[in-house]
Length: 184
Image 1 (tube, rainbow, N blue to C red):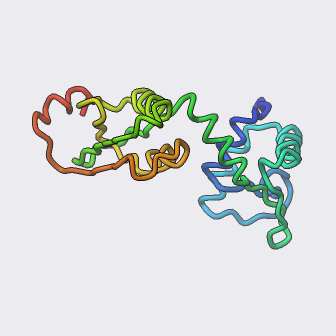
Image 2 (image 1 turned 180 degrees about the vertical axis):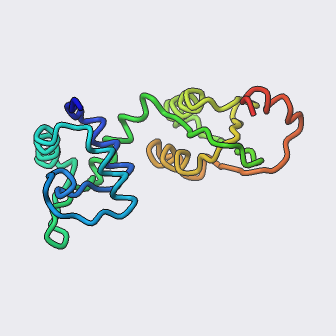
């Protein structure tokens, strides 16, 4: 199996998903009893060249993006708040809402952003389009998939606070049109 070199975005994304990586997972031969979650993590991290991955993690640590912690005799790397912000900014270029089996509920994002925050409003609207929300009205967007975390992150990032509201509803007028649009 050919090992790949880790790229910063891949490492940050995996740290963001898994929360941490233990050094024992990167070093073959160290005795580790793996829980199912860690087993999956090991497979995910396993396609990287270990030496290059350790180098990348150390480089990110020196940059303040990850922190290295001794946890019960094991070295663990975790994202810092700076790292979380960097990961979020990297993901702004390609935002996605995970498409799952539809749970029968609709999510509406409504906003009323003051004129003084016009640039934030335009950026927010642009990201909703990229995430494939359906524009019902000027400041009302629809999607059938859970998106609470993503909307909360966008509100925080653009400092929109109470200007944005997420609603979850069971019924929608002309629902068949929207089901067809989203392919559900």
